[in-house]
Length: 171
Image (cartoon, rainbow, N blue to C red; front, top):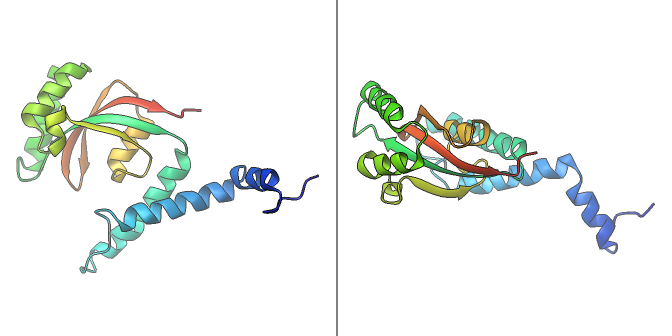
């Protein structure tokens, strides 16, 4: 058997790419990098510290469980400044019934209603990997059915309808 070492790049590369521990460590390091430069960065308030700890774990967990996957999605966001939570959920539920799973209707509704800058692009968020979105949003994008409008989904940013356009890397 070939002993993995830096002087034997083929065996060393195989060792690095075939171990679950390395996959976990890569996910952890990536998550720490993402979280440290995102909206989850530590704040002065001690109230956010537990959220920070959970955010890191949620990010690592999603990256590990969805390794190699990518998703493209669009969303309609109702910020708390637009509607209170109950009104937002009611309006989004009504919109979901009108839109069905039609991507053109979804894009038109996003342009008209969404409080996110992505509204100008029909709510399109482009392609992203696991752990790059907040937990509830990430959970939907990497576990629910593609081509279907999901929601309302609550996050710290407000209430969302999410249309998963595609997902790659499925096993």
